[in-house]
Image (cartoon, rainbow, N blue to C red; front, side, top):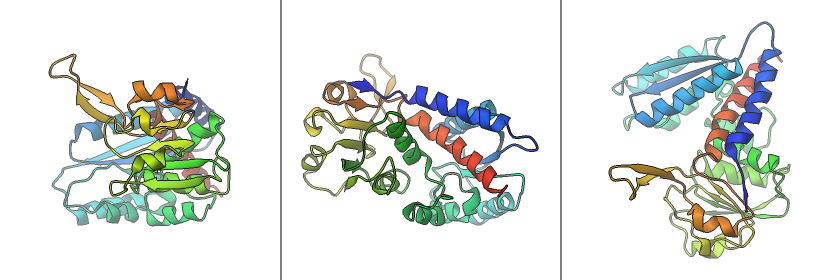
Length: 290
């Protein structure tokens, strides 16, 4: 079993981006974060992104709005960011309050500033394999891990557990692309799929993004498969009362002996998501220079 260390790969990418940004002379890439409400996880995620942006040498801005903000008001705030020439990337931190339609909000961000890659325009560009597409950060991170670990994808069978717009669907599409990494045969499984194990046992590369803690068990994994665990779940830590521990969608301890490569949780895909957001922000900046 070979551990795919997302922390280490992300550090390399951050170092590469730092060098590229330091070579810029007149201005620096600017990413603007928008957070609605005080969800602890959202606060933590945005702080991590801000810290990484500063480390690279990018400008980072943050607007925080109360959970009571209306959808119309939030759209107006996004319009201001769209028209601000000093802002190159706009990220709306999910989740948003229930009274706000996330799809409407994500689609309001100009495609050229949509560094999260969630707008319908960028989704379409990903399907068309266009160079100026902004790929959603977690799927981009998964593919970058595969690429830098030099795992073969051409002709391989990839099984994706999950069909979300943020991870599952775009990840599968990227593995279908006529590129490296890509050229794979892809199967999607989801909450309504039957006999899931019959599919996962055929996977050369298994992507677990289903949001169920420890869902993937060793009897579901083919010997020698690559296992990428996207899940991050809090479950009670029985060894410490009133404490929780983070686990993925894969039962790491029991699955790892069967895998040729596997990502841990935490420290696998998570750091890559932030690194690829920064890569998208630099890309957005460079596109303004063309």
